[in-house]
Length: 424
Length: 165
Image 1 (cartoon, rainbow over the protein chains, first blue to last red):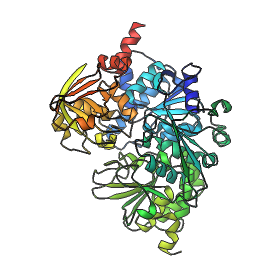
Image 2: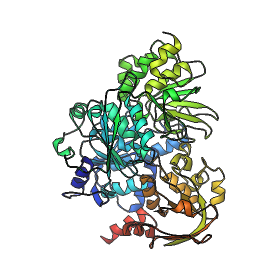
Image 3: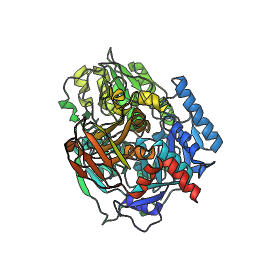
Image 4: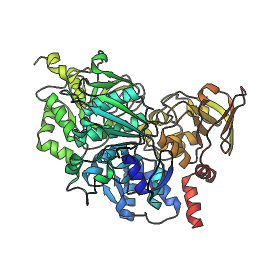
């Protein structure tokens, strides 16, 4: 079996499982946030059970409309706080957490080998730690809160095998964009995307999270990476107990529907052009695209590694007149670290605004929405029509390095060519 | 379960942001959500759907976010069911869970145009285009999903199952 099958077999009390089989699975952790939680709370109230099945296995994180941007949002937050209190569930409130997918592993709620469901499509991020993690809706979250179980169809698996070393200023974000560009937005629909190979082995947890995070953008049910020493180093001191990683390795004879190969050694920075995540071009082929906004943040690319990279590009430079650069650290922990390292000073000196940890403009709910006709280059995960505000705005997705370089020049720019563009 | 209605056809990869944009997620009244259904592709959709329509989608319908408000907006706008070549899995589960019938129908894009009258039999996995006589036999939904739909959604289904115990 591959790692996904091993986890699902264990969680459903079976010796083995096969793709296509529907299994009744025990859930180890369920997560919800301020935009999906209230509907789940309402649905939970209709089921007729008084208490959640296990209050230690549910987490609430307020991250989408925080701090509350409207009375409506404030009411939703109030609903979630009350539910957390009534059910004695852990809640990460404003200033205590950050973006759910960053907070979950930071605070030790992601354990390799477990089944995690979350009322957010980017829940698949936790596959970076060797967990089976997938997004569900609000009603289903209520059902999990009541029963601790969920039905899942065992996915076929596609192995994405990656080799080669990244060039300077080329990142895991560029890799996942090139993967989605080739595989297309429905290229892994209903499937497990298992990332393997030497490039993955030497990749940071941050990079692995970016890959697994965006697996859903090609339709995958989950993205997953075998846990290893890098995983252990990140989780040590965070999780209550560390499982045996050996039991989570895909067998040598594990079955994959297919294997796709990628080599990053000649990969250049990639850009997903409007209005589909698979409309991907190398930055050199994007042409002259002027921008009004540059966003560095989100559950895809708001980690300390991302901020370091953006700061390296922005240090001593200035955001171009007419461009708003918005930087949002993914969590309080990331914010605090960036503060200690002097990164926030670099951003503010450059003329960027640094906002408190939240999802921000990524989903067009709060902070930095786009007006008609405006263009944003963003380190986030979706460029759909209307995603970041007006349905007549354009969103280009790129790495934090590319976004930072573009903020300086005012047009989409290869970070490797920034010095040549602005004059060293 | 049998559903009849006029088709409104869309292409591939209709995402949840065009079905219901993020800025509306703070709305909690489903009828308020419904006013903005599919606004990103057709600002007049909510008005057109009022009489009751069947959405016909291409591949990967409902891709993107896990927001259940997307199928909710469709349901309360007047969409009777969604038929597509394939679905994004969260959207599919959400639809079933809120009692909006959804079924994968390979070949539907070529068999249906907007305005055609459709007759759908979910138990039998049959779709008939009454307007042009074309018939599709598709893979039937598993019995437990048909049961959820018959109960009107997952919560009602769960209530019934928990009460039985």
